[in-house]
Image 1 (cartoon, rainbow, N blue to C red):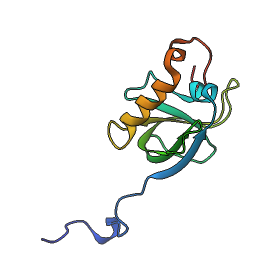
Image 2 (spheres, helix red, strand yellow; image 1 turned 120 degrees about the vertical axis):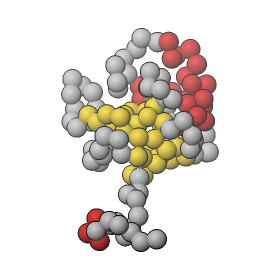
Image 3 (cartoon, rainbow, N blue to C red; image 1 turned 90 degrees about the horizontal axis):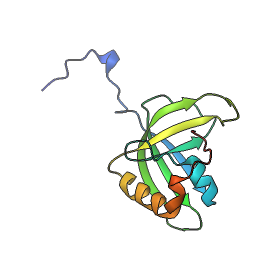
Image 4 (spheres, rainbow, N blue to C red; image 1 turned 120 degrees about the horizontal axis):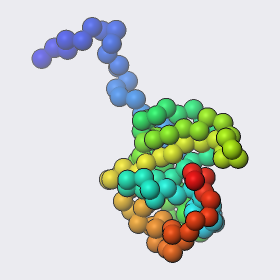
Length: 126
């Protein structure tokens, strides 16, 4: 079988590789501020000035509190805050994949936060 695409449109490196992030959240208050329970499957706000695009796939190594086990999560960028707005930090919202570590991350975060999930305290996203 031959490729019918013109050679100029073939990407010899294969599909684009996802961005890789390493994030350590050491305090419960910081986790509360970053977690997005209103996003289907859960998600995190990641403060960063690195340029990411909407819909871009991201691979994240997440360390929570003092747990030495890093969660490996695949997600996608669902919004970008390009600069500090209304005292909200620059960064992006990452929606967890419903596989590839996303389900485990959501369960672990919600277990840590417990009743705090119902709090009306401000977060990075609200």
